[in-house]
Image 1 (cartoon, protein in one colour):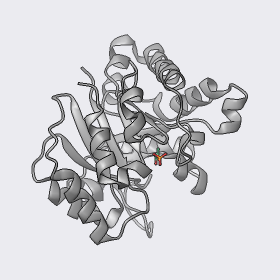
Image 2: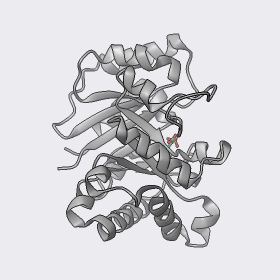
Image 3: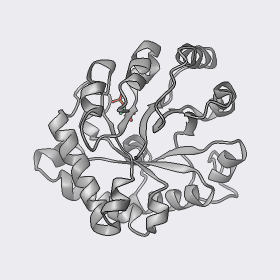
Length: 254
Ligand code: PEP
């Protein structure tokens, strides 16, 4: 059975004292996710090692980077390579968050390079896709998301694809308080799975975790995660509030 995942994306928030306190508050709850469950915290770069240290061997918890370079190594001031991430024991990395695409000009081809570098270092990419409001208003969301997947993932083998996580995040729902309805989420997740099945086959597609992101909160997580093709969430704002994120973890399907 594919993994059900609650992934926190802290973005550029929290000073170190608040970051430590948040992690402590969540971990002290000692939530033991089901066998197929996974909790991931995507924290700012300077906190990666502190956060990894706090997990203390908890098998179903992991730390992620929020981004990585599309270059292997070298003279790229300010960048962080997947090799560096791997060397400090980081096993997950968000790739292609819409904020990276929009504010930092990250394009599908560059994201394909990041995915490849992650896979080469055994880091699981959490590959984000999703359409802007104007695309949805013209009902272009399926074509848009299909193209993101084609451009960044179609070169992968079936074996490689099964090592990635996909996060569908409609841009109009990120940080806006406006969540996709369960019908909209399920429809798109089903569509994404059918795109994967068309390229790599039903069995492979059935193994891929597809997370929903966009104003997930304690109050809507259970309903969203209950959709057949929604395998948990990538959570921004609500992941910064311990009791909210604890409830979100508890909303994962078993
Ligand atoms: C995100 O950062 O990926 C996200 C979905 O943010 P929020 O939950 O705040 O909408």
